[in-house]
Image (cartoon, rainbow, N blue to C red; front, side, top):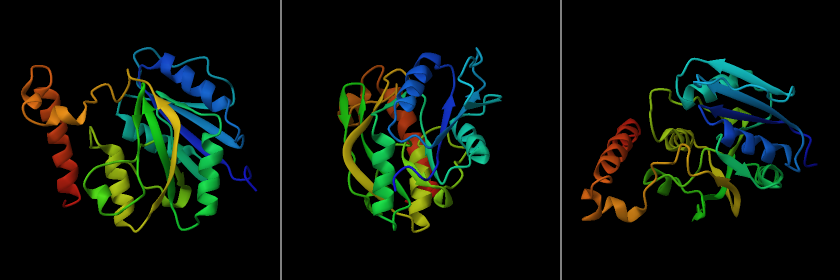
Amino acid sequence: MIGLSMISIIIPVYNHKKALTKALVSIAAQTYKNIEVIVVDDGSKSEIRNLKSEITLIRQENKGAPAARNAGFELSKGEYVIFWDADVVGEPEMLEKMVRALENNPEASFVYSNNYFGKKKMPSQQFNNVDIRQCNYIHSTSLIRRGAVVRWDESLKRFQDWDLWLTMSAQGKIGVWIDEYLFHIGTGGTMSSWLPKCAYKKPWRWLPGVSKKVKRYEEARDVVMRKHQI
């Protein structure tokens, strides 16, 4: 029966109070009610305050989102875990649909969906061990069975989610895709440096204001590729 298993929602946040408020409102509106919410304040310049009493708040010095997610997971109790970014606003039935997908696919360790980045559609695809080694098509805000969770690599500055899925894939874990747009991502948060695919091709990659972003992207991507011997 949908709703019996607890979901731990872990939210790392750094200086995004307004975005966090919207995320929490969308979580409160979820049709799936057996949840716990753990907010990890990763050393925000102005501390996160005045959260509802049922929300667990952890404060730590600024260590980055991977460390915040790991800290939140250590305190969590749910059979399912979702690392919900502070700039994510979920559709009301998002968690219910994700739990149902895992219950209907016992061989899967996690479930993911399409999303919107601002007004832009960000479609995903069926899980494939080969394709995931070429590029990441799974957002970090995905539901994972507790026993399948691996620690986030705190040494990585970018592509931490890709690293997570690559690590799980290497362990033989597979995901299931819900071909629906179940959440929106705000444009002022962690994906603010996102560029369209054409920006990485000649001649656009050499344009002022683009070349530095492309270089940082490629350097960070190379770190993950070397780690996983891609």
